Image (cartoon, rainbow over all chains, first blue to last red; front, side, top):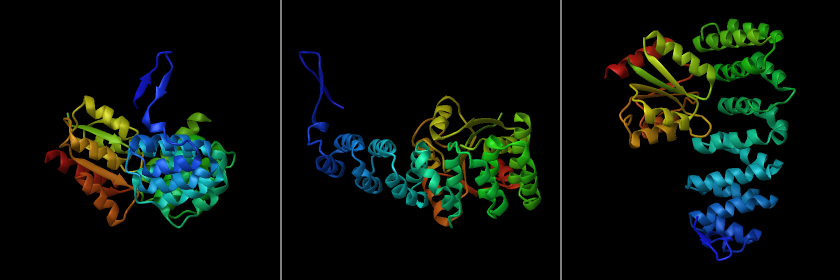
Length: 208
Length: 121
């Protein structure tokens, strides 16, 4: 960003932030400005709870990585239920960057996402169920082991079970080893899952 | 010695792929996302890369696109590995420059056969 040094040693920003900094001015800049103006608008909209809709809408159209990053950061700062509800559909998005950045934002607002975890773990799309387990990676919630055990018991998709086993390797306790052993029996022809279960059991025992 | 870079955010998957490649006598380096993968590839020449699609910070598609753009690994064979099994996912991988696409969980035998083929070529 261009900076201008003034006589009194204060630093003043030039054009990208000259437009109106009220909500409507920022919303317009986010949609219509050049890359620098859009980035600053995205950043400054973090002060407005009502900016979630315009920020999320811009994500679907925005091609610039720097503007997208600014939008993710602002959504994370706003961090309310509206952010969670508007981002969750992106977990099924074809755009891998949008999908993965959504997971990163949701991981940063654990207190808002926890009420959605059960429905995500039961989502019809197995990839969304895996992303739910990815979110659990940083969700230090007392129910995390219980949620993961329910995946081991009820889930039939090998990759979702594998993700849960992987997570249990970190948060599991000795009492859960039997559940992991049962996964080995259930998926005995899946080489990766056998490897993941053995690794998880080894790590749990080492930490017990 | 044949050098392989495994890029995946899941530690167990990296361990699994390492074991499979080490059984072939290959030397394995690991990265946990695309950014780390680019850092590793900036300092080493690899004979094969095994790359996950969904990773934080930089996904597999962006990583492979960057690798193909320039640098001494631009022609390195890449196997992309993902849980996503639809045709559009495979096509997206080939579009960015992957040489092969394997749906997780990868079978040891298949991984080794494909890896050998890629390295020999």
